Image 1 (cartoon, helix red, strand yellow):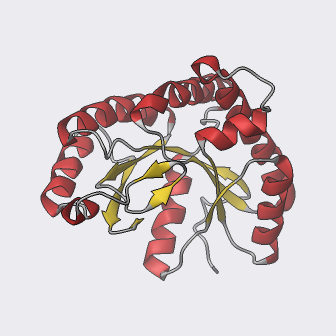
Image 2: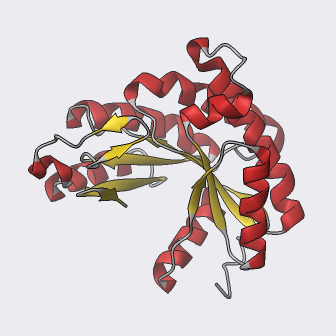
Image 3: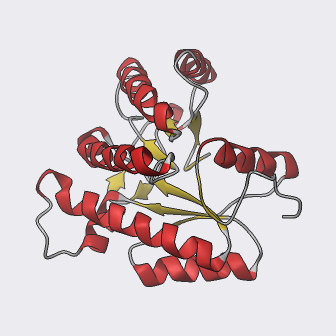
Length: 227
C-alpha cells in the first residue's frame, strides 16, 4: 500500500503506530497477512516476502509453535519453553525486521484459559523491555476465552487490558466459537447458533473494555472463520 501513515516505520510497531497501520488497512480496503512462525528461517521468509511486495506483515506465534521454537528438548513446565521460545523469536523479528525494512506487527495467536501463564510470561518480558526501550517487546496478544462464560471472558480480558495498555500492548479478544478444527481444538459438534457472535455480546464487550482502554480489538465469529 502507498502512503502509509508517517508513524509507520520499518521494524516492529506498537502503540499508536500499530493502530495507525490497522486503521489505514481498514480505510483502504486491504488485509495484512498474519503468519504463524516456528523457526527463524520461517520468520526470514515472511520478512523477505513482505519486502518483495513492499507491504507490512503480521508475524505471530502460537503456544505450541513457541515451544517448538525454543526446542522440544526443553521442559515446558509452567510453559517455560513456550515463553522462552516466543521471547527468542520476538528478538529475532525485532533484529531482522529493520534489516529487511518492513513494518511488522508482532502478535501471539489463540491463548485459551489454560494457556494464560504463557501470556503472563510474555507480558512480563514486554514490561522489562519497556523499562529500557519505552515500548513493549511484542505488539499485541490474543486471549481467546470464547469457550468460557461471557462474564468470565470479559472480566479476565478487562484485567489483562488494564495491564497491557500501560505499556502500549494491544489486546485481541474473541467472542463466539470458531467452527471446525484448529490447532488441536475441535468444534465440529458445536451447535450452529454458537458459531456466530451475538451483536448484543459485542456491544457489551465494547462498553466493558472501552471503560478500561481503547487498545483492543474483537475477533467475532462467523461460522468457521473469525475476524
